[in-house]
Image (tube, rainbow, N blue to C red; front, side, top):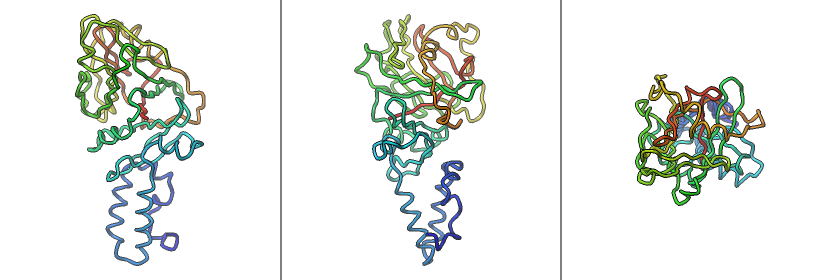
Length: 293
């Protein structure tokens, strides 16, 4: 490879540039391979790049399994055998480590749902990180089912809400939906909710309205979030969203602060008297990241 180094674009040699350019590098790789297949010296480049493209792990969980000392940070993984690689953030300490945090740009990929299906193997554990509004620090919440609903797995859907109610801000088009309780099970006047950092976050559904979701929206076009219930901000003082945020624990190592590309405008909608809110209304936090394992 080094004898042909002049023919290899710098981004294929220096991984820091790979992280900055994200997915675009891989279409450049394909074009380079097409141009260089027939030349003898460039065949070495072709072979090296092919090996490079096939050397990625499928998830942060797999990286952790192969290297227990792997640090938290930005990695490139390849969840799908015939898909393009993906730049992700790996959390290697919290909750046992191995959580893959999804980037905003993933919502534009046609294979996004297939990627989620591969990454989301522990379907009753989701790690959420909250980005502080005025300080460069984060807090986290490990979400698990409420003990009343332990038989239901969470659902993670990309640009879809099958089995759940739609996000109020779905007009923004791109989103990741974290469904907590399926629609058919939430359409009852019962105690509902989830656990966050082993703390119960719950409410009584007052009218059987089956909303039970988080939505993570990249908001590519800088649209104004819905004003639903904005004139009655009761859920900025109490309810599921307030209790959830109050359950968050600080990430104590500032070196592991995630890039902005992994934080989303966030909507919570529960009930029937649980809450409706979005992160543009929050005082102390401005967005949330979602990590799967």
